[in-house]
Image 1: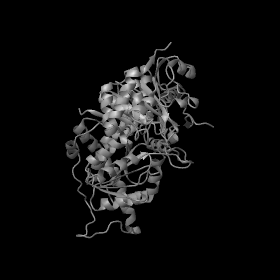
Image 2 (image 1 turned 180 degrees about the vertical axis):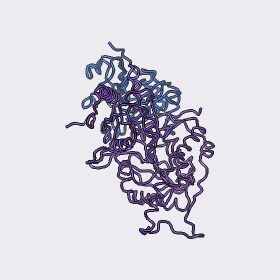
Image 3 (image 1 turned 90 degrees about the vertical axis):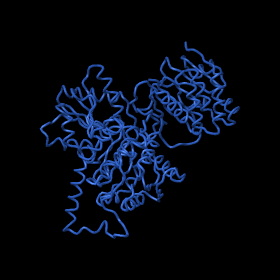
Image 4 (image 1 turned 120 degrees about the horizontal axis):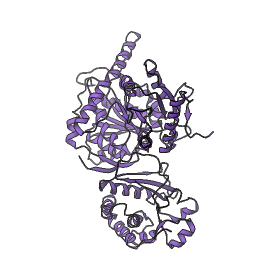
Length: 391
Length: 184
């Protein structure tokens, strides 16, 4: 096993992008993602990284430029957060419809207002429907490991779609933690050079992004939807070859001590790790609690998630962003609708946690689990719990 | 698991000291974390940083609420921050001050293990600036033995380049001269 080194997760992610032999980067700095593009631009400037770095005046331009660079066949990366992601919104729909395998790291952060630079999932949940493959990293090691995975999946000729790597702003991005680096040989073995299936080339002129008249638009969207659904198998395959390469096993749906659990928590992102500590503490007291969570968010791994739940009678679902005025917040909405068609109908309790950087402690997860165990006894679901909010 | 909280002012290097501590622990094959109290960075404003060191993988990602060690880089903060808040009774308080341990006990009410060193004076002597983060790491390591002093010297050398030598000299002086007062 390679020696672990203590390094900030953002820098490790930037290293991983460089080791993927990225050709082109366009980006605009925004907290808490800044360290990633700062380091990449420094390495390009110092001649340590042989890539094009295009500094732009906004995130709208960053994504537009990324599309252009990807369209000519460059392995393309960008990174953003929060308002930056929101400003890209218009172009985010074009990237997958043009079948451009851009990879973007998103350091998840709240959206204004009030102005907040802190972590929650408001930015990415507002972009659920853009047609990108989306995955969550829970710690710095996963940021490093899943970056090459994103390029491998996105550029696969069966996929040819852009992919977002989500990780929590500050909680992961600014954390110094032990990270085990792959060798350059492992990167090169795992991630072959990008061979675009379509590209803009002045020697063989073609059009990308033409108008879609009513006779063709619907079919184009149907094809895009199917391509995104079909990418799931490629993600599974890429995770399997990642395990062969470096020995770490990741799954599109992850379970933690859930096999014989009476109640499980469902959540996304780095708070899974804090929640694991709560699970360990309660398991020591003989309480059967666990975690099941989708690591792959788009396409949503419905069948795998339902299978992973087994026959668990009570489910807690944590949301980290609001869907204002909706019946349910985004993660709960996704999972409840996925379960509606299933024969399994666990009792579901919804929790809102970690909004705008509000810290969540192990004890709070323990209390939530105790509440779920109580629900198992009473058989009655609770209204949505807004954990820790002051009235 | 050992949990650390650092109190300082923006620009003083509190975050860097937490980082160096974690990097050193990881280079010693331990697990560690370091992170700032996230927010806008303002020179002179009170800042906190946190670290954790463990032989096991660390999963918890909340702030540190019940530290085993509190390190105070700027003692004037005691007027506006409760520096011993949550510090466990068998924990360690490390303070940069020219005061005696008795005077610090009187100020803070802290009855446990205490280490004091005149960090700013030592920094002025070697580094010629009142930046006492590496100085205080010397005092911290002597009082807590939380990481290897030799590995910390390596980490400081890698981080500081041409100003590494003065930082190492300052850290060594604090390591040698820190006053440790056992708790009641």
